[in-house]
Length: 322
Ligand SMILES: NC(=O)c1ccc[n+]([C@@H]2O[C@H](COP(=O)([O-])OP(=O)(O)OC[C@H]3O[C@@H](n4cnc5c(N)ncnc54)[C@H](O)[C@@H]3O)[C@@H](O)[C@H]2O)c1
Image (cartoon, rainbow, N blue to C red; front, side):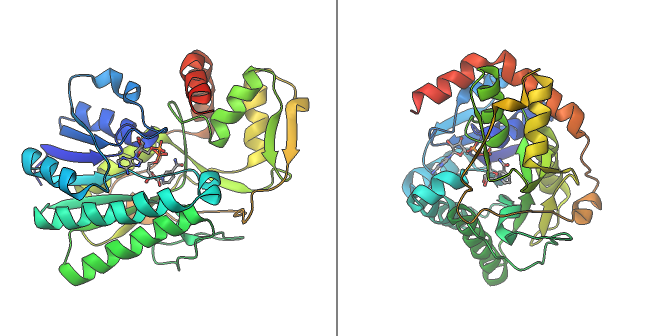
């Protein structure tokens, strides 16, 4: 495939920006399209400043997105753009339906019109719902439980229908919980980090027994690049790490790294509909040469250090969106 020209939506977000940084270093020409919602920030791309094209645009705006495709003529499209926070989706599902379903439809239709050769869409393990024991496979049933997960599952089904109906050249990746530098401070790890650094109570849902599979963000972005380069059109690839932790274990680890007392932990009322556990089988992506490289000890240490060193950025986010 032509290595030159990728259009990346949501490239100013947490995972998208890591993907953009990696793709540029690998020699791709990158076009970033991002609405810059509360979650988007071009500061994440300062390392590669001047080395990508940027359009501040909403993926739901069909006419504007079409103009970008006309001008930039991308060979491939990687769609990270989404509303991503489960708690916000419980408050109001509307932006999730708009961006995560209708926005995806716009990207699909325009990609079809411009005969894009490869479209990689980023989905999540949350589309499968929870699993008490064992793993989810790429063909497991979709049973999403939050409005966020339902909107992502909706997009996956729409893409599958385009693959079948139009022989649309898309690939779906479903990643587990990401963590690492530049994560917006509403997600578990940066929230715990920030509160602990400030000696504030650290809120933990229920008793903290829910389990997640933690994937370091650079591994996730490498996985997406791998799928873009070597994945088979029409297929779905899980991207997991096999690193499963109870939330309380993650919280205690962060407190330990910051030399803060466990007395800061404050158990709060559980999230409604809270999935207990996710776990991905990711043999399929291993078969195309990807495997996770960053262990939890290394990943969490780097993340905690980054959060400590970038407290100003974290505070800017917290106070700007209050
Ligand atoms: N973070 C995780 O743990 C995780 C796990 C699995 C899958 N995912 C998926 O990966 C993708 C990226 O997640 P993230 O954590 O980097 O999210 P994020 O919230 O950090 O970033 C999302 C980006 O999309 C942009 N965006 C939102 N709505 C848009 C719109 N209408 N038009 C254009 N841009 C828009 C935002 O400005 C932001 O830059 C999402 O699709 C998410 O569902 C995330």
